Length: 318
Image (cartoon, rainbow, N blue to C red):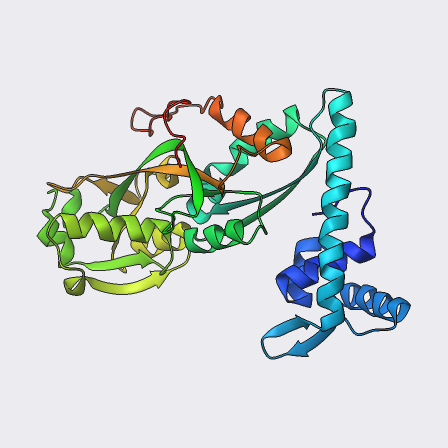
């Protein structure tokens, strides 16, 4: 978000510039939109120039605004460096950490990971964003996020990957569905109404790849609904709208009477949740601290079907 050494007004300007939206910046900063507007207006008056132009596509930087944004980023980076260096004198890790996590991870794993992390590193200022895999990759590449956690292939070789933890994607059906009594074949799954995540979702990409490898034509799928969250998909299955593939992590506390997981003959869908960050040396400061903490994080197992922890030394690769 911002550091204690960064001007609040300059920080508001920087966030609006990055988000290209006054309302989105207000949401991220947890202040009202009129407050954002007032800060930008005061900054424009003090400089004697317009910094943004309002368009149908959002808030666009003027030429003067673009020049100021360059300096605003440098000020923020210098302030963060100062805090890190001062903290290091006392053996602390300080600074800002912007994390992006794809939807399943953000909802079911990240809170547990961060709860322990902030106890160990209380002076790190966290900013967390949830989006689908495609969006998280784009924001890491544009340096709007320091580090990301994704649940599908990144779709590019422009980021470094480090495996974090294993996941299994399973078929879920209503408890009274015929598949609950008789496990289906891949062909039978393809004939059923299917609920899928939206385009750009890591889960969707992994499921489609697995079904294609199993010999099922994606054109033959009866996709009745696309939803942008796993919880919405589970509710849809529970309501009888169709069947779906979801992460086993999303079912760890699911009441057994509402949904049933079903094994599909000849189909096993596994993947690794992965950290992503820009190419180059391994991250230092807050991002490096998160990686080190995650490599030794002891997930608590509450059922025998829980996915396995990735080996700490088994995932880093270019």
